[in-house]
Amino acid sequence: DADVTQTPRNRITKTGKRIMLECSQTKGHDRMYWYRQDPGLGLRLIYYSFDVKDINKGEISDGYSVSRQAQAKFSLSLESAIPNQTALYFCATRDLNTGELFFGEGSRLTVL
Amino acid sequence: SQQGEEDPQALSIQEGENATMNCSYKTSINNLQWYRQNSGRGLVHLILIRSNEREKHSGRLRVTLDTSKKSSSLLITASRAADTASYFCATDTGGGNKLTFGTGTQLKVEL
Image 1: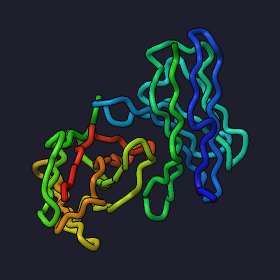
Image 2 (image 1 turned 90 degrees about the vertical axis):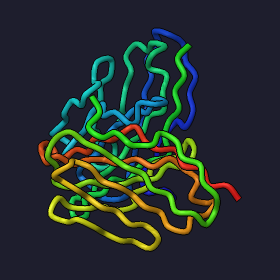
Image 3 (image 1 turned 60 degrees about the vertical axis):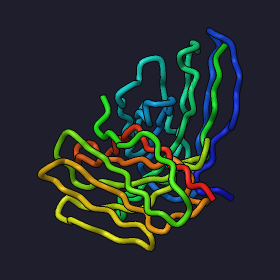
Image 4 (image 1 turned 180 degrees about the horizontal axis):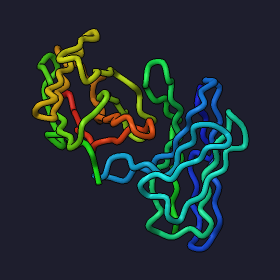
């Protein structure tokens, strides 16, 4: 099983719908992140969490919200999806000892 | 805004050749990391170089860091078709303990 698991892997939805992307990890890391990837723009940070009680906005948090339900679970929500939120979304955890990020396989979201 | 910018945006080489990718960044860093992404997949960590290091090796990978020029390079020696992927640099500026990614270099290694 993957260390960082994202669901769903693919989702097509309509404008105005509420969408939740879920992430769970077995790495035991406190720090978790949500990134968005668009062609030509690299990865941009949406939200990050240092532990269950510590959630922080990234550079593009508008239109998104998150929930850290447990150390192992970090969910990203789009309350009312819009077409420019069509993108590939990645969840990641961070190993504080090595500094490296561990990524899930991504959730491809299409908003029509 | 992006902290890191990779150059070139795309690179096509023959198997066996070396591939060099460059990353420039804007602010002081604690460390710089390189990641690889196969098409549409999650990113995988390759190597980390700290701000007080100038060069680091891992297998066929060689990373250099020039903090005075705010730049880093990733060299892949004796490339293979399996090295075809996108490569991203990511900078850790320390505050908030988050990584900021560049726009990536798409490498294609042809047989």
